[in-house]
Length: 66
Image (tube, rainbow, N blue to C red; front, side, top):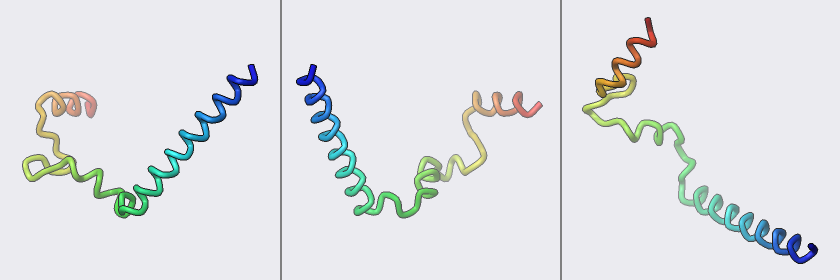
């Protein structure tokens, strides 16, 4: 039983270290500079913000408004 607890502890420490390293890399490379920019990156000139061009999505939003 003690061996399993030590194994779990080691795995948790390794995963925690990986998480800290990944967060440090993301913060150092500017991934958190402008979080709102990431939300706008999926839109292009053919589909501006707030105006869905998918016909199925347009039908859903019209029925939801009624």
